Structure formats: structure tokens, C-alpha cells
Amino acid sequence: MRILIVDIDSLRPDHLGCYGYERDTSPTIDAVADAGVRFEECYASDTPCLPSRTALATCRFGAKTGVVTHFGDGQRYDDPGDGHDPDPERNLGFRQLLEHGIHTATITSFAQRHLAYHFTGSFQEHVQPSAMSGLVADEDAGDVTPVAADWLERHADEDDWLLHVNYWDAHHPYSGIGPFVDAVRESGPPASWPDQVAIDAQRGVTGPRTADLWPTPEAYDNPTFDPLYEDWSFPDDIPDRETVEHLLDGYDAGIRKVDAEVGKLLAVLEREGIREETAVVITGDHGEAFGEHGIYAEHALAHAACQRVPLVVSWPGVTDGNAGSVDEFVHQFDLVPTICELCGVPVPERWDADAFTPALFG
Image (cartoon, rainbow, N blue to C red):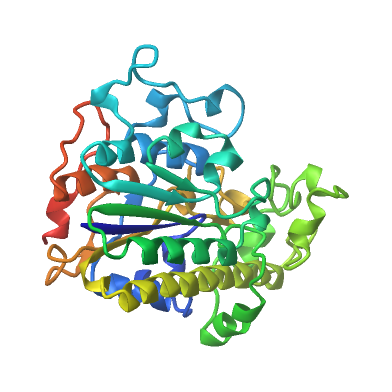
């Protein structure tokens, strides 16, 4: 089996056409959803980025791995096992596939950005697409796609592989979105909430990236952060609906930019003659707040806006004839045991994740 997982940072499902959004942000993703199964109630077990992808890579809750935040003791992974011996019943998620004959590879700078060695430890092959991994804006989709396309071309004649590709362009500050802004603006209105009444009610709410404290204290007059805001500058505060729509335009254009890159990957599969025999999964690590709890373009809060993520699965021979939506609750990290079951790989007993395989069969 060939499996392509597209992992898009900060992606809210309700900003995708296949989840009902009015704007045309995601024509490629929508087409994959039309041919597959779309999960309406998929939630990341842990957020934001580091806890979420740690959960995906370990199939265990952050309370058990120790990774529950980005900083301090809460970012440190508690390695299962005794000394240098891993625990086979708590094996790393993608490593379980690797140990049963599936070539696993990831194209991402995530492990370097968050010092998450356990994430890349799941994969046989780790490709960092850009040497500039310290700041989100330095890893453009234009760095990622050529590397991913090359990998797909080189492995097209092989079987039993899984490629994980990570995009960051929907994450603020929406760098390099210029060519996509007009397209999303012309396709329909942005999300209608928060309206001016809600924005006015947020006055006095404090905390990073709230209406009265944007973007964060350390970002002001800080040369390290200045380059991040050159392409799509943000206001010093959020005084009105017009300013919110500016942020939503940037976010939606970032999604449209990534969607175009996903289209390029699918085009490679088509050229190589393997599109119809490659499983395609599209998901994200967390969502993004746009006014929830007064917070904007940020994802460090336990709210549906941040916890709910898209999950679209198109699996040849499985979702064929079973395309549609699933309303039952699933965790995003349930994806890995599902892949194990479909590939005939045993699922470790001490994983917290549960396979949602029956949903794919209708």
C-alpha cells in the first residue's frame, strides 16, 4: 500500500469548502473529500503543535508522554521502555509500521523547530526541506513541495510506503499569500463571526493576541519578529470588523496556497500512474482562534476552534463506494492504528488511540 499524509498546521475544518465554508479556499482538498470519508467531529487529543504531533507519533495522550505544552517541563518526552530498550506495547506510532515492512518517511522541519526527536524517531527517513527552521515563516510551501515531489517520483515504482508531508502556510503570519488573496476574497464573504458586537464585548480581555494586546509584548520593536510581518502586516490591536476581515483574508489565502501545493503532489501521483492506488489523508495538528475567548490567530487554548481538526481519508478499495461524512467523535491520533489495521500491522495494546476502520467501510 502507498499512503500520503498531508499534515497542515493551524487548519480549521470550518474554513474548508468540504466542511461548509462559503469561500473557495480548498478546491483540491474538497475533491479528495468527495472521493473519500470526511470526519466531522475529529479532535486533536493534545494541542498545540508539539503536544499534538507527539500524540500522533506515539498514539498516547500527553498526560502519559509528558508532552503537554511547548515550553518547560511540559515539553519533555518521557521515553517508554527500560534504558535503551523500547517498550513494544508502547511503540512509536509510525515506527510500528516501519518494523512491519512499511517504509516510513517525513518531510518536515517540525522536529528541529520543537526539538522533538521522538517524532522523527518514528520514521525511517526524515527530510528537512529547509535549513531555515527557526521561524515558521522561513519554511515556505515552495521549499516543501519540490522535496516531496522528488520523493514521490523516486518511490513511485515501490510499494508499502508512507510519506508524511508537513505544510505551515496556514499558520500566521501568512507569508507569501499575495497571489491567493484576491481569489478567496472574490469567491465569497469571510466567516461572519466575530461581528462588531462581539469585538466590542472583548474590550478589556487580556492575554496574548487578544484585541487589546496584539500580537504579543515581545513582538513589538523586536528585530527577530519584524521579518515575520513584512508580507502580511498585522495591526497593533483589533478595533473593528474590518481589521478582523483582514486577518481572515490572510488565513483563508494561506489555506488556498497550501491547497494548491496539495494539488501539485496529487499531480505527481497522476503522472506516475499511482494516484488510484495511493491512500491520501489530509489533516492538521490543531485549529486556530479567530475571536474565541477574545483571541486572534492563535491556538494555545482548549476550545473547539483549536481542538477540532479536519480529517479526510481517501483509501482505494476501502472508501470506494463509501464516500461521505462521519459524525461520530474520533481523535486525530486514531489515524495511526487505523492505518495499522488496514495494512495488517498489529496494534500495540498500550496505545491510547483506537482505530476508526469501520467508519471507512461505511
